[in-house]
Image (cartoon, rainbow, N blue to C red):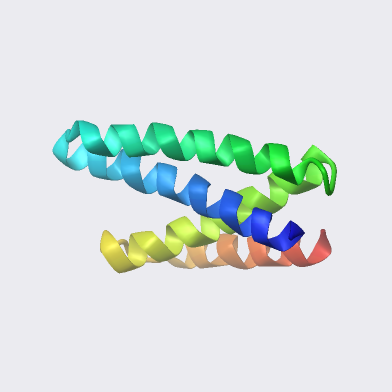
Amino acid sequence: MYYVWIIIASLFSTLFIAMIKLYDQGHNNLFLLFAILSQFGSLYSYIRLLDYDDILTLFIVVKILAILLVTLIGILFFSYKLTNRKIIGIVFGIIALYLI
C-alpha cells in the first residue's frame, strides 16, 4: 500500500501543476478549482504516507516522481522540448531515487 500512496501523491502533485498551466493559458476557473482539489488530495496522501515512513524521505521521493511526470506531460501535451541540461537533471533525479 506504501507504493500506491506514493504514486497517488505524485499524481496529485502533477495534476496541480498541469491544472495551473491550463488555467494560465485560458483563465478558466474550473482548472483553478481542480488545482485546489488536487492540493487537498496531495495533503491527504501525505497524511496516509506518514504511517509508513518519515516525511523527509517521502517528500523527496514524491517530488522527484512528480518532476518526472510533469516532464512527461509537458512533452506530450504542451509540446515542450528537452535540452541536454534538462535530460541531465532527469538522470540525476532517477539516480537520487535509486540512492534513497
